[in-house]
View 1 (cartoon, rainbow, N blue to C red):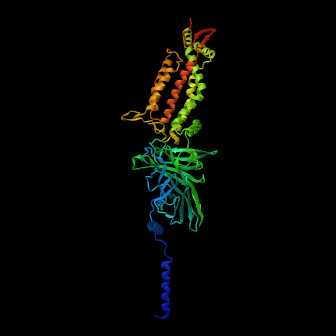
View 2: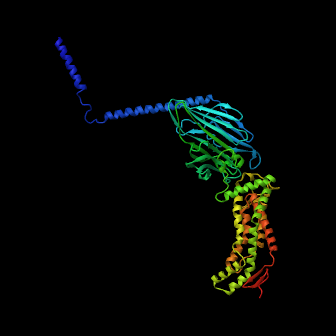
View 3: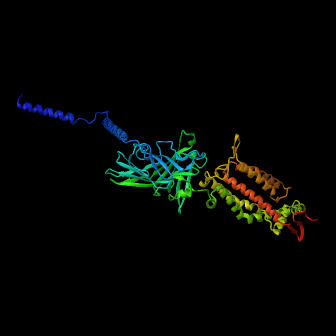
Length: 579
């Protein structure tokens, strides 16, 4: 082939390649979208590959965690104690396993009180959870114990995302609370935003029964230095409280509390509480309370420290005042009786200071209340005697103005005014005693001073019924115990009713109904108060006996009182109307 032919052949080949690769249509007719589909498919494959890489990375992290966890020794009995509290901690979750209060006994008085007995080992008190990242099982993760002593323990763990968590827990002598410092340290060169939840209570001792105040609680700042306590019963769980101004969270029974309180009031975002199953039937109403902290930003190579106090003790003033803001838990009652409750507790403790027996203190308190009310009681009794003396004359007025109720009422009011009689005066002492009664009821129900406080002989706990004798059978509505104080109270109430002057005519149908109701009271009150605290029944029985003595004394002191009407003596003492 000559040179010209060779050049022509190469040029023809180049032209054909050009037309084949460049000038042909980019896509043959009828195949629109194939290229886009290919790109999407490739994208999905890349995404799938990325997810697979992510899963693989997570699996690697978990394997690393497992390896690290295997290298950390399980320490399941770390003892921290002082003179009032003995606690057991574990490095699995860096959490609390048990709290024993040696000063107190369980209700059966068979052993010292174990205040906390958590049922969920994966949600022990003070165990944590990162809310943004569920990869880390912090509640069961083994922490390193970097320091351990009789009154302090320090746990730490380093997560694969670069956050190092440290819990510094210490206990002072004579205190019912721990100082807890939680530090989140960022070991990376980038800012990390994180938030966590921490268990405040789990497995609180139910104390006596399931209706004795067992509930989760949240303290809410309502301004002016006041804290409102929000209670959540087990039957209302699960429950989430996102109120503004939550200051602490925990659980309470009748006499004890477990409370976690941050040093900064605006740290809590929410409180959650949920009931949990417990194989122990005594802990049937078990629940977990979690405190959810607000999200924080941790700068590169920086840290955030959160300080808490963790209270675990009795609900009395001496213990609660150890921690600022917890005295609000002593919320005896609502409304006007709250201040009365506080006064009664002070008086009871004052009497107890002289005679260390709360039963005797209740007797002295009863005498004091009756002494304060005696002037009004005497005036009331005098008015009731006058009312009784006026009944024959009132009967004559009714006969004289028969059919004219308005006239009878007008004449009666003239009589009452003339002789200084107040028809409602008989109710005044009872009305004044009722707030005291209800306040004392709340005080004896919830005051820690009454717990296992003995009086005499068979009355060994003024916060419970006196329980003289256990019966071989069960009485409906009353139970299987013979309680003697309510029966004594019933007899005393019956005698008091018989001594009370009758101030209405027996012919009046409404008066007859009222008398029947009064006759039923000596039977109704013992039934209502039969299973109430013996301290309350002791107060009411003693008050009734004193009232009987007052009535007898007042009736004897009342001389023959002459009753005049329109200038004439119509009644001489308690004798009949002169003709």
